[in-house]
Image (cartoon, rainbow, N blue to C red; front, side, top):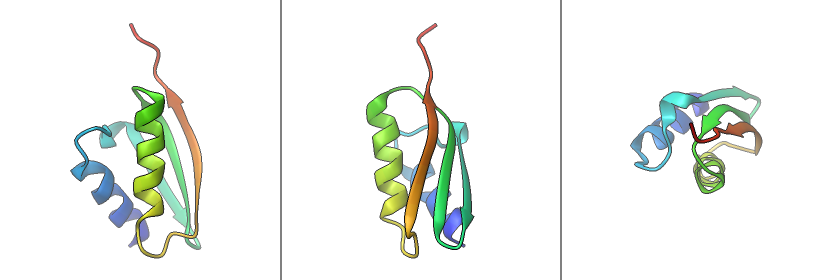
Length: 68
């Protein structure tokens, strides 16, 4: 359920493109991977995940997509 709550938080946020961020959870530790458009979006995704009840730690494995 933590994974679903983190995904919901990312989807409801207008800045973070949730479809490009993958969420995996094990024992309260959330791993975020995939691509974001900026460092601020990356930091925001981590903050949103940290705020979800039951999350003990967030591992950030996201990459910033370079402009085309």
